[in-house]
Amino acid sequence: MGQGLSCASSQEHGGLFSAVQCGDFDTVKVMIERDPSLVYQTTAYDRQSPLHIAAANGRIEIMSMLLERSVDPDVVNRHKQTPLMLAAMHGKIACLKKLIEAGANILKFDSLNERTCLHYAAYYGHSDCLRAVLSAAQSSHVAVSWGYARFVNIRDGKGAAPLHLAARQRRPECVRILLDNGALVCASTGGYGCPGSTPLHLAARGGSLDCIRELLAWGADRLQRDASGRIPYAVALKHKHGACAALLNPSSAEPLVWPSPLKFISELNQEAKALLECALMDANREREKNILKGTAYSIPSPSHSDSGADDNISEASETELCCICFEQVCTIEVQDCGHQMCAQCTLALCCHNKPNPTTASLNPPVCPFCRSNIVRLVVAKVKDCDDAEQDIGDVGSPKMRKARKSRNFSSEGSSSFKGLSAISSFGKMGGRGSGRIAAENEWVDKP
Image (tube, rainbow, N blue to C red):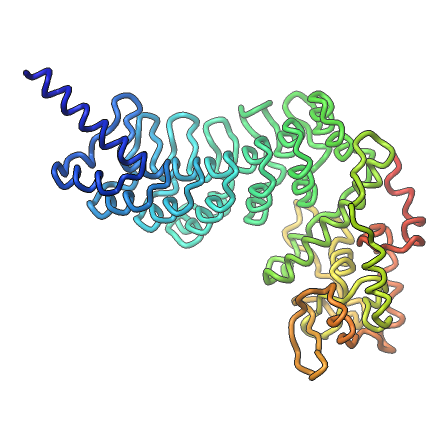
């Protein structure tokens, strides 16, 4: 009889776990109301609680009910994994946010690899979960007790930070988010992968061009060696990732690097930042085309023709274009003096020198028109036909271009263009660069 009772009890527990997994809210509610102790039961081997199963399967209603019954949000399973870790692993963003609201600890470590929920989100490539965890870290005790930068670069049992895992698993969006939040681009691992590997080594091993682009754009060192003395170029060659090897070849042209040490760059609003980031990636893609030209890894040309865009630009007068390159529409404005430039020329001005990791801060560049220090950049304002100011929306709109009245032509600025002559060394930054600039820079991408 006792054995029968035990078997019945086991079946009842199994029915609860199955109901939670399937999202059968009514069944779960009835079972728990009949026996409230069921919320503390776990599976036989992995010791998964109903909260773990609900989090892993995205059953937000069942999870809310369990949390309302005072279930510990940090309950652990056999491997010391919390429900928060499983939600991050499976990309269940609603459950993850609910657990954070319930007070789940984002600094818990599992016993498998000593990883946190941040490692799980980066490893499995769930960028929304990654953002949510980082946001929670900024507004919780973690930022005070641990420090936010320390949390972003937290190491697992083998010395891998979330950025290492994202780079190795080919997660470019997660790589971008982590770098934007202060992840160390040149940090070396302990025992993860080949000892001493940087995120660039791991991206080269995984063969992710997108991850390599992001890392190089944030200043990753192509010459840094792992514990075996290999540079990322050698790692890419070993694993037969030819296109990655071409970009990582130390003899190829240096990419433009996001000027993160500049104070006003860290204070950009999202719209201005997006314009400059887009310009940076476009410039580096032009570099890639030159590097890969004539190889088996050539980047295919866009299916659409650029002639239509050229026709649109010809509709605008010269005064509507950037007065530095005379090719792109002005989209960025220096706030204090009001002078405007296109995003490409703004970026080239800020990226004149590659940031030095040992330098705490850089001297800000000066406005090329009035030579005043650049303190803040904003999205350029335009005036429509009714003289009402508005932010730039679709910079490709012919109406927007015809409405622009440039303020960049001035007697004081005409002699200032000489100071930007070095900008041409970045080559053709936009999709419609002049042939003259391209010809001057053909030597840049040659070994």
